[in-house]
Length: 315
Image (cartoon, rainbow, N blue to C red; front, side):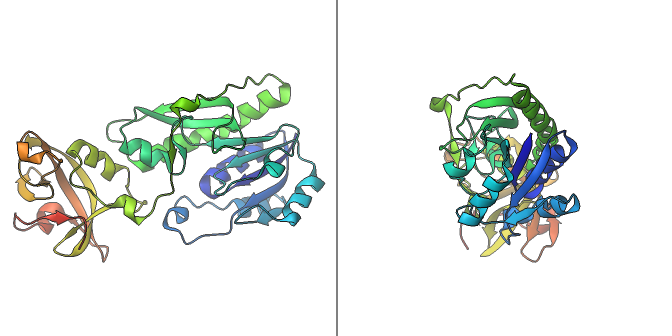
C-alpha cells in the first residue's frame, strides 16, 4: 500500500521506522516543527530527519488546514494514512481521503485515556495495565473503531519512563500487524464503547503541583508518574519551589494537617497527607530525594535538617 504518515516525536519516529521496514511504500511524511514545550522536548526523536534519511518528502505543519497540504495529499494518492502523536485535529477531508482512511496509533487502552499524556494519567490513577491501540480515525477524538490493541502490566515501582519504554516497543509490531490485516482484507473492526470513554487534556505546570490533601498512596504514584526526564512533582518550602524526585508510602500512620513536615522514618522524611489526616489513621508520604530550583538534588534527610513547618501549594 501507498502510505502517508502523520506523526511527531519518538512515537511518530517508531511508527515511521516500522513503515519503512515494511513492504509498504511511504510516499509522504507530515510532522510538526520542533517545539519548546516542556513535554514536547522529551522523547523527541525527529520524524523529519528519519524521513529525509530515506528520501521521503516531508511537510512541516502545526495544523493541517491549508490547501497546499490537501493538494499534495491528493497528488500522492495514498491508500492509507497512518498517524501517531499528531498533536492537532485532522479534518475529515484529510482522514477520510484514502480508500482505507486513517489508522491512528494511540498509547492507551481505548476507550479510556483518550487525548493527551495517557501513560502519566494512568499511572497517577493506579491502573493495573497500559497499552497501545490502533484504531480508525473518525470525527471524534480517539473514538474510531479498533483493529488491534496490546497491553503491558504496570508494576509496583514503575515510573512514567518505565511505561514509556514498555509501550513504545509495542508500536512497531502493532503498526506492522494492523497494516497486514488491512491490506489482506482480514481486519476486524470493533466499535468502542463510548460509555466507558475518558478524555484527558494536555499537561501543564499546574498538573505537577502536589496536593497534600491526596492520600499518600496516590501521591507516591503521582511522584512516579513524573519521573525524570518529565517535569517532576513539586511543592513549596519556605516560599521556594522544591521538586520531589523519589518517595514512598510511610510505614507508620501520622495525624495532623496535610503538608506538615513531621518526622524522619528510615531514609526519608514523612509529610502528613490526606484530607482526613486529622484522624491519625493515614500513612504519610515518605519523601526520599528532592531537587531545588537550581538543579541540586539532595536526600530529603539532608534537605530537611529540622522537623516542623509545612509544604504548601503556593510560595
